[in-house]
Length: 166
Length: 274
Length: 131
Ligand SMILES: C[S@@+](CC[C@H](N)C(=O)[O-])C[C@H]1O[C@@H](n2cnc3c(N)ncnc32)[C@H](O)[C@@H]1O
Image (tube, rainbow over all chains, first blue to last red; front, top):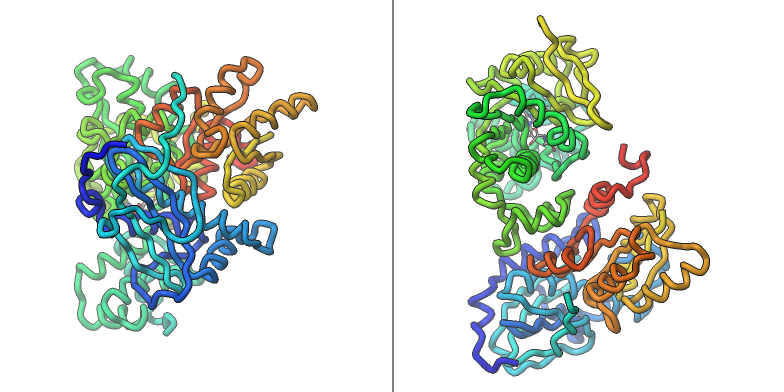
């Protein structure tokens, strides 16, 4: 959309704010007593990412990255005590995507607006052309590596949503 | 390391002396859970080590933090609904009719926690009275210094604004500040927040037209409840209104109050001639 | 009481749905705004009209705001209480949703207590639960 240079993400957001948002999400969505701990551990060999894009005065993506096994455990925890007890791949993609969505929406509200949020996507992390423009929190959940990356982009990563006539 | 019986007993007595809060035997888990973060912060192995260290080297700042850590600050906006509906539907119109226009109505949120009760009142009055900031003053007090500071700041997390605050009021009276929400300065100025221990002689305040004394008497024993109700009554106007928590009552505690049914809830008024 | 939970995440539908069931709601689900309109249409045929819709904002096909507008344009659905349940939390968006006809707005993440508080505000809690 606008090719005008947006401020770097580091000027708009600090890791403490990202952490404080995660501190609200983990106990409520992942489960009672659960926490995203901002202490890095060795990154896994294989990773999976879930992300949502943000388009507006600031363009980029909010990405959650972890090992596939951690993604499975997160999904189980999110769905805990709620049937079905067996989580399949679709459940994992769905739960990880929803975590990215809730992180993304709350982070979006801290950034300059108005802006819109894309639908959750899952796979290997998006490339955006501004790879140096990141605010990242490397942390862990239940001892497993988990990374939250807020990644700037040079342009909108999703078409802006349809406007509803008032 | 688990909490020793002597450590628990020391904490129980300290908390009772400083706040009148009763920690029954069986509440060891609570003491453990609330004090463990403090112990860990000081690089100590457990709560008993923390207790031993303050017993050996008394330090008012630490004992105070221990007492504050054992208060329960659970609160929400419009908690239980009725006491706030009654304020605008019955109490406020009666008070406005009874008072001179230049008389400021005085409302007290005693045991205000992080301020949701006091700001609920401020929002309702701001919406009901065009001159609310000059017509009403709200006093908010709590034992906990940390809670008084939070009330003064008027900043609330996303999770806190989610607890019972109507969305229309959120957008009307708050602005975003980072990932928190900040109450409008005009409403913040309606509230004076200060520390006050209800279980000790009260400072000169009031006289109050309305007192919210909610979800705090439950922590005290009967003589403390009686003493607090007496002291509160002495700071109230004779035609004032007292709101208690849903699980609290003056009945069987202090007979100098008259219970009045207001809508689905109730309020208490000083008994004439008491 | 009856509720229609509209969210593209099945995890979220399950979470919201199970809390509502705890409060005695009979719950149906839809994965986007269009599916929700279809569910309302089908429900009408069997006399099933929800008391409450919990509505996510960002969904494929038809988003939550468009759904609110569509429901508000239908006089037969005037009784239905509409609550956004979404991570969208810019002030401007909350205002927009309320202006379009949503009655309440719950921001994700939320606790079961927060959902319960909103139901109490909307007068949708059964007596024994609100006591
Ligand atoms: C559960 S909160 C109630 C907050 C609010 N009134 C409500 O109903 O939501 C109880 C509060 O009482 C305070 N408290 C406990 N003992 C007290 C005392 N002795 N004097 C004053 N406040 C006290 C605590 O610090 C805590 O914030």
